[in-house]
Image (cartoon, rainbow, N blue to C red; front, side):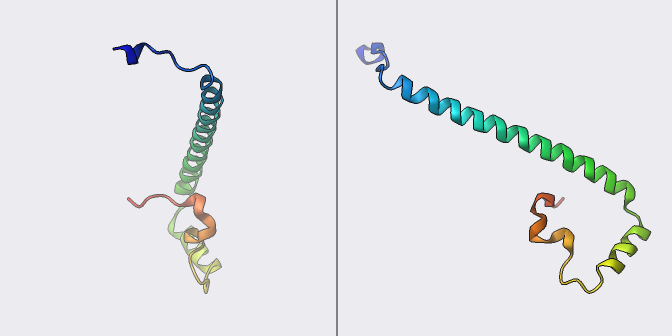
Length: 85
């Protein structure tokens, strides 16, 4: 039981607290950014769901006819990728 009664060395506390603050702050910022991106993505999805029709899809096909790949699936549109249902 004597091992459990030893206090934490005073030299390690000043080293651990700043690291914990940096990691916690970074996690908080990344969580906030992720939630904002998801919120904006859902907003755009609702807008495009309203816009999506057979006529708009025909216009899109005509505009991108001959394109090598669908721009909606391009690597450069990585923020727009969502898991398949």
